[in-house]
Amino acid sequence: MRAREVAAHVARYGAAMSKSFDEHTLFVALHTCAYRAMRKPRTTRVTRTERMTWLRLREAVRAHLVQRNLGLVYHALRHFRINPADRDDLASEGMLALVRSVDRFDPFRGVRFSTYAYNAITRAIARGRRRSDQQRRFYGMPFEAETEQPEREDTGKALFVDRLRVVLDRNLGELTEREVDILRRRFPGYDQRRLTLEEIGADCGLSKERVRQIQNRALRKLRDVLEVDPMLQ
Image (cartoon, rainbow, N blue to C red):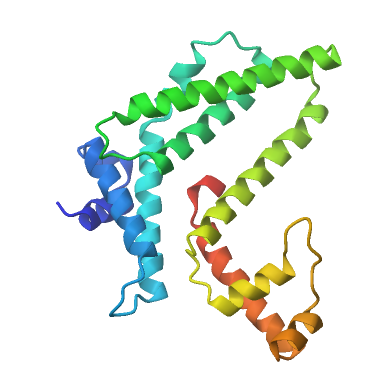
């Protein structure tokens, strides 16, 4: 069965009807969908609709692989002595490590995904546990829910920034060079000054309103991609 047919089957029927696919087949489908979504052919132009179709197929396979391997996280948690107050946070660390393992796994190296992911999950949980123990020793008392809440919010913000960076690095939103340039000027790094719409327009020979339109169009493209990212659901 071709990679697109595998991905389409997973997207249509979900985990219940997709258990017959072996690990290698699913990861090949995942890589194929990613390649087709990001490729830049020299002849015929790939439309944004086609790219979004491939991207949605990829996310369906990706979500299926994550769901299929959730047991690795709970299996890893059982091998640690964990304070009950930390269990949810450490489980989240393990889940994030699992998702990242799905993204980074190379099925052509002859290594089983369960081995690769379990090692990454174990390391993530161990780091999270050490961090919690250090914080508890520093403060000399268990954290209250109010104290923990900002940390969870920071984790969610960090995840969003990480996924946005992936979208930008791979140009999954199909931004034009001008859209990229305007976003970089409007949302620069920490050590750079943010330019106004007027300043960008004067430099590019565009009106303030035209710069705003280009900026908003670029942001909509990014939002469309992030809305189908299962890590942010």
